[in-house]
Image 1 (spheres, rainbow, N blue to C red):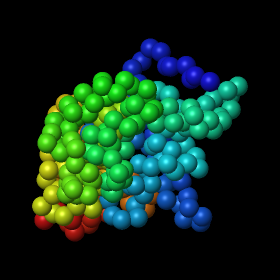
Image 2 (image 1 turned 90 degrees about the vertical axis):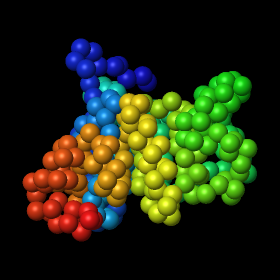
Image 3 (image 1 turned 45 degrees about the vertical axis):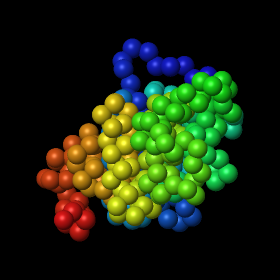
Image 4 (image 1 turned 180 degrees about the vertical axis):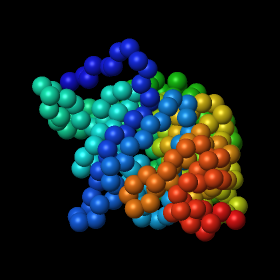
Length: 263
């Protein structure tokens, strides 16, 4: 059942309301609410175990929340409403909805038996039924965008970690998502390779790509984000412009965390 789109007032691209998630007795997310506007870059920072990655995985239903709601472009994510009650979406409907959210993980998850180009065109051809030649043209443009024009025919094992992650970004962009999710995309990289991935993400931000980024790269958050969210203990402790949260935090917990991670 197709949900009716809201009319009148412009809605944010992403709205999270009272999100809750537990694993057994451990409450990982507690009443998390957040708004991300179209074209905005939101960086989520905080200590390990604070719920950052779980929040990101709930957004595209890789984890099913226990409560609350997620709206993408005004439409409920993962559930449909009928006669005042909410029902889980069918797997097919959820798969269609997920196409609007690209996700880049810590690991690269490329198909090892496919070249960089083949990795990028697989989903557009298989899922969106895009003509092969059109998909190839788009993939080559995306490889140019991420600085890998000459690596179209290379297999993942022939690429560095940074190059593989850039292919993974291009693969997500190939589905033309409304929202890009990044789960610590540089954490698995050698330090000298981090910059090349962050440079691609900065370019995407400059082009107006809406992104939610879980990161420990504070300089990236300071330079690129429109909004920084500090999480701890499954809650949002504070959020706001990076100049406020990172340079003039209001909460003692934020100040303690930043003192440990910012040189």
